[in-house]
Structures are given as structure tokens and as C-alpha cells.
Image (cartoon, rainbow, N blue to C red; front, side):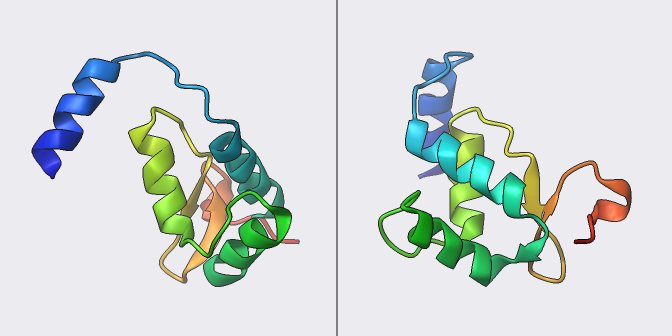
Length: 92
């Protein structure tokens, strides 16, 4: 599987693939952060950004695979947080 991923990544190179659903999901995660990752997954479904329950980690893996820079990450407390915020957290 990793070989297939490596070959596909190599072939795609710097090409930006048009994936509006993924882009909307990433925008929503950035708007909602910080929040619990399970709640974020439900918000993605509720907003229509994904059609079925997916983990935030899976969405972020897909984004990185497709050459996106998500702007959020899941921290060690299983919370979605903005990348680059002081201390990794932004309080609401």
C-alpha cells in the first residue's frame, strides 16, 4: 500500500487536484477549532462536508495525501486545534 501511495504521490507532484468537498471540510475544521475530535467528526457529517462518519484524522490524512496543508491537527488530548497557535490551543 505504501508503494502505491508513494507512486501516486510522485505522479501527482505539485499538481493541485480540485476537491471542493475536502476543502470545505478543512475550512470547517479551522473555523470550529478547538473542539473534541469526535465532535468535529459529527460536525463534518451535520454540515454535509462528508456523507458518513469519518475520523478527523482520516480527513487530515486525505488532505495531506492530496497536497493540502490542513491548518489543524489532532493533539494529544484528542482535540482539533489550529496549527501555529501559541501552545497549540486557541481558547473560546
